[in-house]
Image (cartoon, rainbow, N blue to C red; front, top):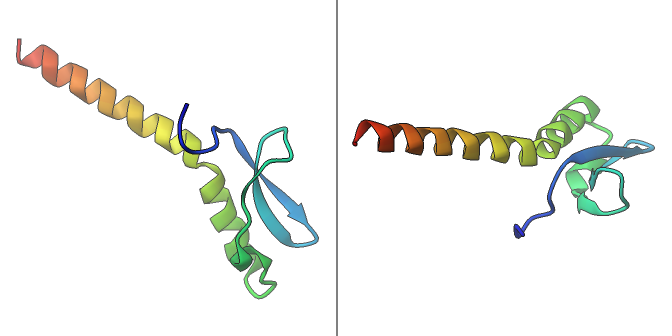
Length: 77
């Protein structure tokens, strides 16, 4: 099991206060004071959206590395 909370993660908005939560649960993954700022709501939502996609991005990068490693191994035979 990984050291991080497995995805997927969703954004929860409570009156403009954003949290990143494990999907379909009450488990808060990220509650960052910067998300509470009403001065930058568009940037806060974009940041939360980016953070919430971290598990999918990690999975994609691991797949790319695996494909690269397999391709390099096959070429060296």
